[in-house]
Amino acid sequence: MIIVQIILWVFFIYLALNVLYLLLFATAGLFRKPPAYNDLPEKKKIAVLIPAYKEDGVIVETAKAAASHSYPADYFDVFIIADQLKNDTLEAFAALPVRVIQVSFAQSTKAKSIKYTLQQIPDQDYDILMILDADNIMGKGCLEKINSAFQKGLHMVQLHRTAKNKNTSTAILDAASEEINNHIFRQGHRALGISSALIGSGMAFDFAQFKRLMLETDIENNPGEDREIYLEMLRQGYVCEYIDDALVYDEKVQSGQVLEKQRTRWLSAQLQYAVRFWIKEPLKTFSSNIHYFDYALQTLLLPRVMLLGVTLFIAVISILIYLMFRLSLSPDMVGWIIIFAGCIFSLGISLYKRISLAEFGKAMIGLPAIFISFVKALSRSRA
Image (cartoon, rainbow, N blue to C red):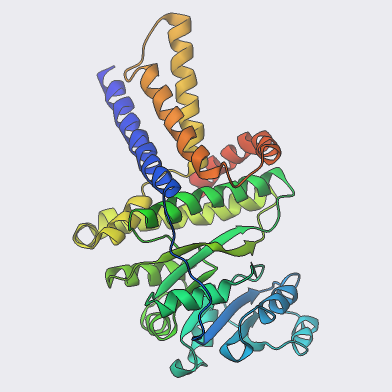
């Protein structure tokens, strides 16, 4: 019985720390007054890279939208990195003001495509590199805001990636998850002076610096190449800015099966980095700056859907045990209820402006299935 109590207390403390972390940054995000990134007469030259692996269904429209973005045409170029695209798709690019870089690898990765493309571009041609996914559409003024941020001396920027579609309960939950992460790990972090997290697209870097790190770092087979670049820049003391009003529209996952596969990859990467930070390189983790240490802490957090489900389940079980048998767990049901309430509050204040009540109701219907898919993803992930 003592062993069971110890296990329960350890689990309780772990979940409580998860919730406290979320509460801290969710609350901070409510009070951030972001700096204004207005149009400036001085323009930096921007290379917009769009890797496309078998993305024939969306890449042409993405290319059209990117090429017509409201930024002086002489100061930006769109590069489509074509990996196994159909001939019809390649022919469609001929009518667009974009540059097409064709690549082919035995085993394709985003990092290989970006690295190859950067090797074809002289350092002095561009000041800023922006990376989009093949289904991303930039909202109005994105490049102007990026230019303004880099004119102010920044080296790394994450834009506000948001949902392009909310047509299924899975897509709504995926969109809600992204907005929660935007508020907590980007808006909230910047409110406290800590580096924003990257997402993987809708991000911009100092061109020469990013190219040098890509060529010097062995990450060709790493699906999270942006993490490695991010970590190296954090080590060097650079901070990632988050521009909340610069929107990049992203296609959200529409089926639970696809979401499960996506989350399996993400959880595997999270576990691998957790092992690296806390088991393989603990001295580096503790001796680095606050931004690096905070990112390491994030690898220990449960996904928000799982945290919500686990705290709800234990709170309900503890209440039922008390009502049916007049037994009180240790920690007691009050503690579990407080943790669950804290989780709900932190997620709620992160989301209430980003999703309608109708969408929220639709998403709740699919939440149990999504929770199960997360559990499956966790069981299938490997570090």
